[in-house]
Image 1 (cartoon, rainbow, N blue to C red):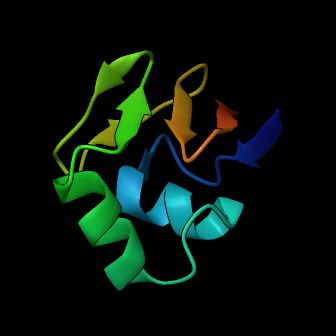
Image 2: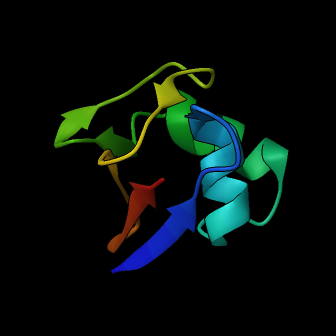
Length: 69
C-alpha cells in the first residue's frame, strides 16, 4: 500500500489520484471517479472534490493508497 503525505489539512480525491500515480492526468482521474471506479474507505465515491484527510484509504484499479498527515 502506497501513501500520500498531506501538505495541508486535506487533499481532493482527484489530486490524490494524480499525486499517487493511480491516474496519469486530471482527465483520467475525473473519468475514473465519474465512472464509479474509485472507492474511498470502501465506498464508491463520485465526487472529484471529495476532501480526503489523514487515515482515508483510496482504492482504484487494484491499487490502494492511504492518506497520511
